[in-house]
Length: 310
Image 1 (tube, one colour):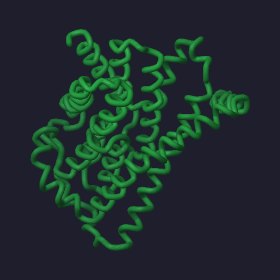
Image 2 (cartoon, helix red, strand yellow):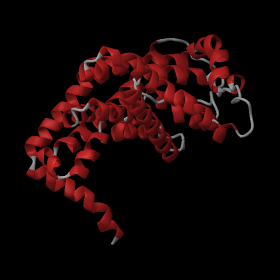
Image 3 (cartoon, one colour):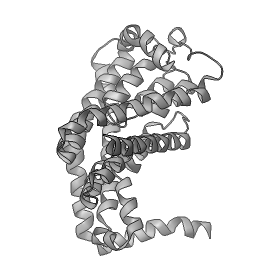
C-alpha cells in the first residue's frame, strides 16, 4: 500500500505531462534558457575558481586575509570565512557547495559546516540589483532597503543559529593544521579535475531548474481558479516565482514583502540544488529548510514595515 501511495505523485505528474505537452515543452525551454543564458555564465566560473582555490592552496591566502574579521563577526574558523564570502556574493547554491566541499576535505568541522549552511547560502547582490530592483520593480529607490534586508537578515540570524552549533565555544576550531592533505600543485591535472567537478555541479543545477520550470508551466491558467495553487506555485522556482507574484499582485505594499520572503527562502528549486550539493557530507537538510523559512519570515516582516513606515 505504501508503495502505491509513494508512486501516485509520479503517476499524476506523468499523466499531466501527457495531456499538456506544450506546457512541458515551454517549461523545459524556459528553464533551459534561464540556465544557459544566466545561471551557467554566472555560476560556472565561480565554481571552477573556488575548486581550484580549495585544492591548489588559495584557501590559505583567503583565510589569512579575511579569517580574523569573519571570526569576529560570525565566529567562523579562518577556512570557514571563504564559505561566507562566496555564499553572500555568488548566489545559490555556492554557499552550500563550498561549505560541503570544506567539510569533505576536512578543512572545517561538521558543526561549522552545518552552521555555515544556516546563513550563508543566499541570493547574490547582482541578482538582487539587476533582476529584482531594476527589472521587476523598476524602482531605484528600493535598491538600498532591498539590499540591506536581504543581506542583513541572514547575517543577524546567524547570531541566534550559531548557539546550536558552537556548543559553548567562542568560535569554531581552526583545522588548518589537521587538514587531510597538503595543497596540490596548480597544473593541468588539477584544472581538469576542477573543470569536471564544476561542470557536473552546474549541470545538476540546470536540470533542477528545468524540472521545476516544467512543474511551474503545467498548471497553466487553472491557477486563477485555485488560490491555494496560485500561492504555492511561485515558491517552486525563485526567478519565475518573482515574476508570477509581480503579475498577480500589482499592489507594491503586498508584492514587495512577498518577493523579499521568496528571495530570502530561495524557492524549492534552490533547496533541491542545495540538497544535491550536500551529498556525501551528512549535513542536515531539514534544519536548513527551517532556517531559510525563518529568514523568509523575517525578510517579509521587514518588507511590510518598510512599506508602511517609509
